[in-house]
Length: 365
Image (cartoon, rainbow, N blue to C red; front, side, top):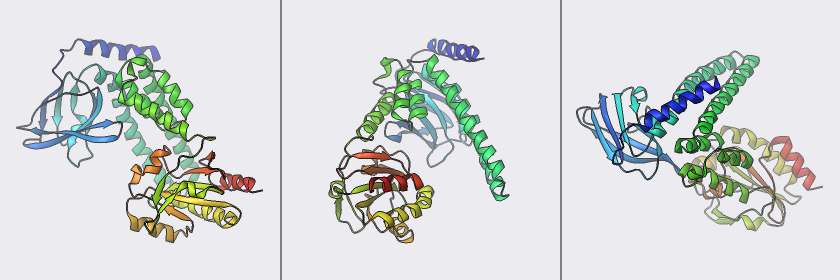
């Protein structure tokens, strides 16, 4: 079965290689219901989702050309709408045919990278549909108090995710020189350990080293290595709740927990009672906490601090996921904790609950 799948991928690439080249990325076709409407084309690059351009669809006819710096994952849809058609684009001729209302079902033809990624795109749609079914079933089981069924549903979800990742990696192994493979690796390993990310990059040909998606993973590895256990914690300065600057280095001489969190983060709020207990028990024994919020709204941030009785120092630049300290520490999910010794060296990461309590107690013996 595996060999049949790899053969299908290879055949798609051969077919695409016979297509005529275009001057830049050219998209033509028909979108019903899009007469005199503006469609937004966005790209998913190293910095996230960014609008590349807008396309004015006249009489339902799409006729758009631009020059792409390199193959890139794009999303096409009406401005503000969640319904989009997503595909890999490069500087060759593409066609699109469908309706604006159900643009995610539009028929696309494209070049090499499009065809390499197409099986993943189709599998992703199926995966999302199944995830929605499981999400609904999980909620219904929760309302019925059936925790056994919830566990079974979650295990089924994890199994499907694992199979989807395996399928994507088969595409990578069959196409190690394709920019689409670099994109897949960045998705599959983007939030993994340093070792797993390195293993992902090792699947790719070195000709992809300049790809933005290869570089994204490579830069993430470098950042994580700079804040790994055993490294000195990078210093940063950020304003507290009163607008006064606080530097991380000012806490030297104490064991310090850097707690990345946000008022809107459910798991963070559920963890806060454990952190409060930890602080209350050890605050007079050479232990302190610095809360770093990924909030954007100051009122919500301050209210959460008050409601959860978080009496330690707090800082934020109110930039959400673009928080400068979070970027410095390569934070990809919250709650995220970093434990420092008295000299400012990182001695543990992502400890919670009893595990965190026991580690701090051990340090303060």
